[in-house]
Image (cartoon, rainbow, N blue to C red; front, side, top):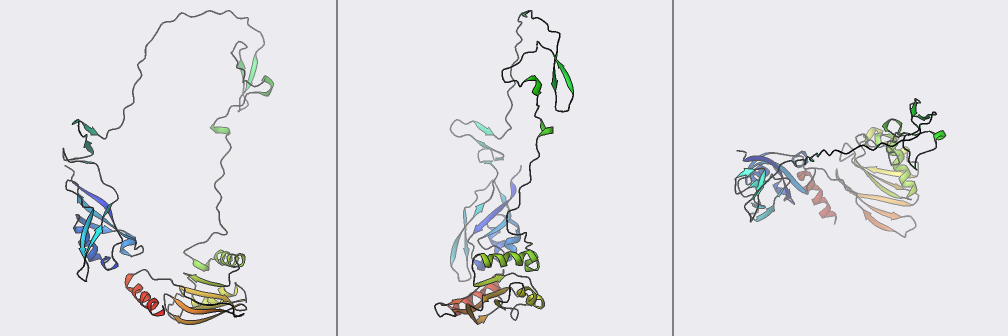
Length: 312
């Protein structure tokens, strides 16, 4: 009898200190036998919920929540969401159906059967109708260009087209081919190339000009430090740039500004942020500006949170 089924479960808003492999295995053991986590959970690419594949016993009551204890000793009630559960009858202890309630009948999931119509043969006398036979025959032109004879005594309808215009048969052969949907966007951008793709630079430059942007932050440029100057020249001489190559070899954050209108004074920078002061040269505007691009792991983001706390 089928009793154990692998089921994907979600743990929404799971505390960050419980995202280790050991912690996830302990939580999964409260529900069944944990098999593995998905890629976004194991690499911590998504922190809104953790997703695990667990073998559960469908014959037992499945909990909607579990109680976990954090490092500080505080108990937390963690919600559990099952992405899919098979129908299970608690009365028959069988998977695949649910017994009806009240009348004791049992409803099983079976494919619907098509009703066969009963054919009744009825004899009817034929009516003989005498019609004059014309010697001339009409012709019908099909779409392939073949000419076939039509008896003049063939019944016609009021919606029939005139004979000299011919008959037009619409089939799959002469339908007009559908055009493929056009790709909407300013340019085709290859995300894996970053700004190494020339169309990406053109798209960003056009966006800055159309929206009259004076300060911009670019992340995940994927430009090597040796090639950064060549890419920056494509934006024009009116832009000045600062990058965090000294903190991150990949230069994950670029900050650019129009030097004839804006002054940007960097104050602090790390591999995940650049903090500075923006001021207009006419003296009418002054503020701080902190573009952030956090790393994916929890340990590296702790450093980011400490830096943001100190800057605030």
